[in-house]
Length: 245
Image: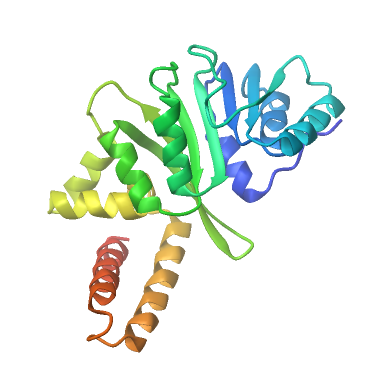
């Protein structure tokens, strides 16, 4: 049987999984990413977990169709709750908002469970989420920006570190004179996307700058002063990044 064909968004997630013995896919939905990983020889074992019985049953059916029941295990789990320490070295978490993903990591304690790498794809609140990762010494080592079906998605390869040596952020500081500006820009737009001068990030920022400038023209300073300040701040940060491409 041919391997599953993943969407561009999920392909970006799968391509960031490297050198893992056992992967835990949190919120597995249809189970297609675990099937792809096993059939592609990326890892030897996957634990596919979901909080809802319906998606997990569908995932189980798909796994059975591909004859991978001995390599992919399904578990009903709220976040990382049913993952035991040492069972997996990598987790995947995709297809949910950044604040929910942040809560899953806070409650799941990946460091205590022996997780070394995390493949994450938050779909909202990216600045807050990246800031959380940085503060927890969860360091972004690689990122992929994807445009699919009219939306932009960001996938991240994150290293669970025991020190505060954040190499990507330090390299951005070298390119931007202000450390404060560099950290804010990294949290907003992603350190490795910027360092790699990612083409899709450039397209996104160009589009976002145009949208924000259009919104700015419609706002009254007296009624929306705080929002205007936030928009101008973001436009300025976008301009800093675009000028360095």
